Length: 393
Image 1 (tube, rainbow, N blue to C red):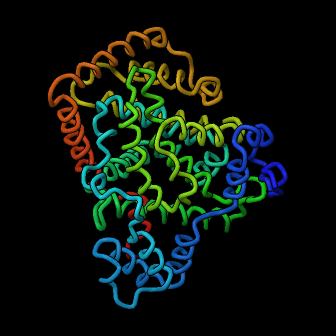
Image 2: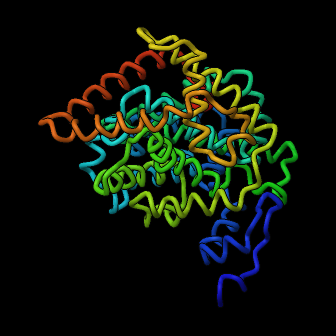
Image 3: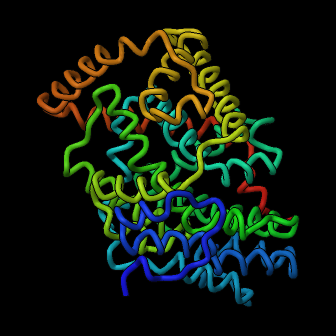
């Protein structure tokens, strides 16, 4: 049976499916099916939280910090989730977990932040279904700086050396984010979310989009300023993020064959080409995001530009990356677009020089670690939404 003969229930949010089947074969129908799949393990924990309250939350928190074996009389759904996240698949590289995501850490901090904002998060908001869900929470447009910081804290904790080891901050926070997704899924469903039209809230395809938004998307964005990864760097990046996908509850069918930008780009094309254009919710989220991001950059000590200057640069880079979707995302033309080739040439030359100088790459990684650790310290002064959600009431 060919993929074109497989009958699946197609949510209204899906566009261009025949063309996607032509380009991507059975993977297109897999994506459609996954729009109706959430995260059964995490969803069961939410039901247990609501039924048992404090004992379930206490067991979850202790189990994440100290291990499943440390929790007596653990509720069954919490126990099943802990068993899943504590089981390290055979394809995980222990060396990579010890080292951290060195590829992301080596990116200069201002470029990483621009790629995170204008690439990763803006691409997430490109999906009308995700944007609708996020605007419906009443959080992101009204409190964009905090949400930007919270996502940044999770990402920073995740990429640091040892951050994904059992009980480490990145490991704990990734599972907390997974459970917040499940809470949003339950809340939206209870309030009448139309799954037939939009798919299950934060479904497997949406989680796959998030995974891509922290792998191929930021580095494709960075290619606009000449920052390109070698094949070895690409492989190391994806193999590290395989484990993040596992902890987030993403079906490994989506990611285990992705070890390079080309393959990730195929999955990205499948998701983007079958997604409706950005809408007013997307534009509201991107506008609030860019306001928060450029204010943050301008507030940095010794910032070379004010917020308006950073906004012009962010608009230029984001406009280049998002292409035909830029206007639909509310990203205007920028006077700095014309200088991007000069920036790209300078950054490419800098990367080449760094690779030739003994210890140059290692120095970049160490600089990145210092910056990221400083960010983590600064952002852990207050709790996040995903931490508050699992806190003992």
